[in-house]
Image (cartoon, rainbow, N blue to C red; front, top):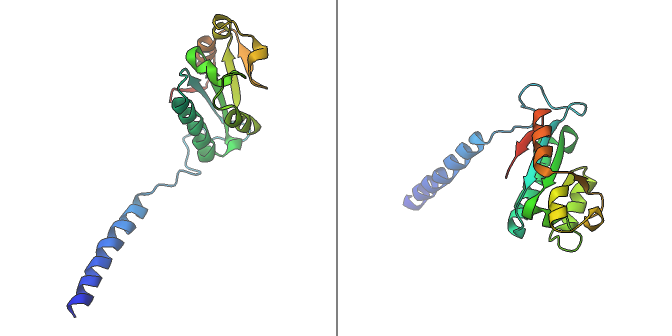
Length: 155
């Protein structure tokens, strides 16, 4: 009789925390602030990439993937602006994440290079990965997008 009582106590000790943990999980799908994101009016998010450490670059790209999963790719428009040391991620000859960038571009994530940083590095648009856009200066691009309603993230 004692072993059965211990078994029941042990089972209750495991079941209660699992049930409590399930109750705490919040499903955000479909529960967005107004105005709700739609295909015609997606969330617009611009992400800074200013570091050349491969771990940080991969972390930023993982955040992009997570944002797309959360909103559904059709309800979010993402742009990554690389400037300073972060521009390395977009260079043909130095990018440690070229394949990941290509995959994200296939999902319509926009990658933008800072022209001022390119000039400092004595590089041109021809040195960038395919389909990467260039702007004269990355930081003013972030400012202008922010002023036109984009949310700026610096993961």
